[in-house]
Length: 541
Ligand code: PEP
Ligand code: MG
Image 1: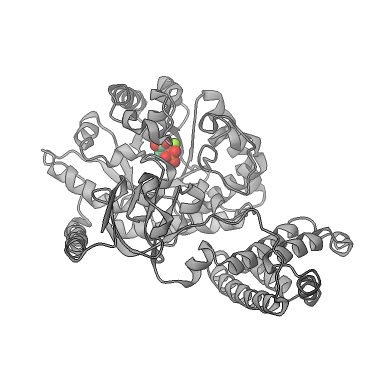
Image 2: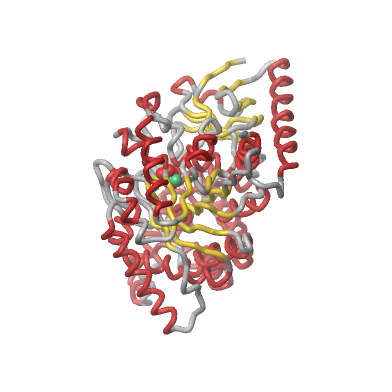
């Protein structure tokens, strides 16, 4: 048995076979093959599998995002059934004796640049479909990770490093847990693991070797350890720990429906943070008082090179609004940039992305995308208690500009006779020192506030939240941070407005008493953390 120690980022025990994640192939190698017939059969099998996958995707999409959006997958199936294209690929394999992966890729590009394709005026958007189809085929042919997810038994994923765009796509029913060589506790990958409730240990270093692929491992997300090929004693102990964890959670379930109130009668709201459509169900199960932070940017990281349409966004927001009934659903507009990169939005190279084009700043540059999101949020506001929140605020001007844009979108919806809540509440994130210093002025501009302690820590201490080498200095309980939280709370309350904390510090139970004492109105945490926090609050004198 080999024991490795890393950083715990998401609690729980996972036991399963280890599988190393290979990121999508960017460069496809040109390989000469001897047996062309076998290669053609390989392509044929991959094509059939791709059609079957698309059929499933089409059915799921029809149910979840409507017929119009599902049509995309139908059209992709047609590409795979296009006789001319199939003959082209078979011909290239036969004549040029090349591997199917390379040929598929080349045939896709050839199709896109063909005169017939250009003449049909298909070139807007449809190139992406062809490339998407080609990528699916290449994935199947190379039997890499995403393909495994669709077919294999549940497993524990290992990777050098996982980016938020990888993590957001993890299917909890397939990925039992994950372990990485690098990464930090405050990265968005860690945030996502907690939100999804996937046990994970990161920062194990190079001792996490690819040769462990296929071996049985235990991920101990409570202690930040992993055990490779565990012995009988460890396996038994860990199974007990897993059951104890589940029992502990079951015990907490008796707090469902109870109030978040201290022994002396002080109340504080508990809401939950979500990032994807799947998380909404976890919020309902958690008994949270609402969604305190919908990290809407993750929806842009799930759609590949295609920007999610207004309709797709609307369907997810509507589901959140309807599921939560009269409880609040705070949708934060996309906070892309930094480590949250979406393939569908080109930000360009930046030396210091966390301090670069990010959040609202980026959305001002991508006005059309921003307005579509505002429209989707406003439309969803007709179905529940939806509020809108702007991220990465540094000035009053930014708020005024964003509010102005929102107003124009409202006018257009009105003209189009589309229902929405005209009095939708507007809030801002306090996650830069500048926002702290002008929180008094901001409190006269908007209805509510949420402190993002993750970014506030990184910008106040001048420490990159994703840099593992300085994690030991990254202290969200630094006196400067606590002082800032106190200042913001006072300023906001002076204007009679609502203040919450939605950064990870909200779930730090050693801080709960402090938050209650200074009068924070709401704490928003990962769904699995809601009941533990409720217990902590109820135990406070
Ligand atoms: C934060 O910065 O604390 C926050 C809640 O936003 P995010 O973690 O998504 O940057
Ligand atoms: Mg933030």
